[in-house]
Length: 383
Ligand SMILES: Nc1ncnc2c1ncn2[C@@H]1O[C@H](COP(=O)(O)OP(=O)(O)OP(=O)(O)O)[C@@H](O)[C@H]1O
Ligand code: SF4
Ligand SMILES: [Mg+2]
Image 1 (spheres, helix red, strand yellow):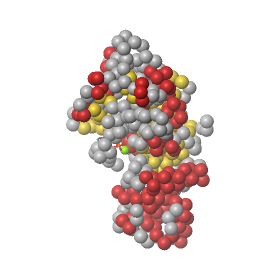
Image 2 (tube, helix red, strand yellow; image 1 turned 135 degrees about the vertical axis):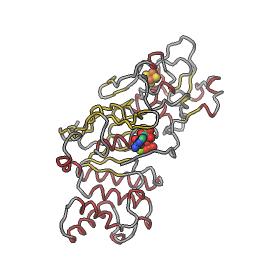
Image 3 (cartoon, protein in one colour; image 1 turned 135 degrees about the horizontal axis):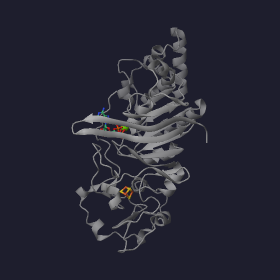
């Protein structure tokens, strides 16, 4: 594995809100290696964007540190941090909202060059703008058009060109394709992949969409209500799916086989509040494996296979008390029966063996919280 470029150590952000402190990101630890794509996934409001912004020092952490190239950039004076800032950029979900509607395409791409005094004369800057347009696949005839005249894919290409203008080494991609049509998504993902090879870029790729994250990531971090619940190499995460929340998230993905019929795991129960959370597992309110310990002790992230980290008291040894839900299927457990959930997960239960317990069948729609939350939930982000 290549060397560590970026490291989050106990990174924490609490927001003061009516009622107390909202634990948006709570003591997260992870590293990003040079040249890799680290996927960051989880449902709306779990702290993905806040984590990305903390890494770039667009937000000051409540606690914890970010290290870049072996330097603590969190406490560094701003004048020293400047040289790192140009190396770390961000691409946003909604390119339209992040582009000034009164500026032409060339002015938008030129702006970071002017602000950072990259080229002192206009001719050099114009040359660099045209180069960047070529790099991201924007035709030169679009030089003087305005954002509203372009489709979503082209607007996202402008966002990428701006991010590349300062020749960064690390880019936070915050839901870069979520607002785009599926056909355009693939083009932008391919472009970012090519750029990563060409410029040896390192990415943090944020998305609520696991199928996209799986496609682009070397390793994946799964967040839930401000904490990391699972972290592993991409294929390992999909093969083992140790944390109950990850199991539910993955069950919502289509299986590439007509022989296996799966359905999303429907998580019952209440989502805990991120405001002043107690010392308990944050997933306990929705977890089918919950035990008494889960309500009184927060599970720590621990390495249960090499490179595979899970925050669950019973990871690797999950036994469900009521319905067993595996690989998108609900399976009944006899009372007192020990069930090897890992073994079941590997077997992919066939449809005819799928037993939907009476209790599960009777769940009222309002008791069911779909894993894939509505995207429309409002999120407040301030600079
Ligand atoms: N400036 C702020 N003030 C108060 N609360 C905030 C602020 N910014 C974010 N939050 C809260 O912090 C939590 C994490 O927000 P964040 O935007 O990081 O989530 P996210 O995982 O990126 O969600 P989404 O998928 O919707 O973009 C949410 O509960 C959000 O409402
Ligand atoms: S710690 Fe307990 S409640 Fe939390 S995920 Fe594990 S079994 Fe479920
Ligand atoms: Mg976000």
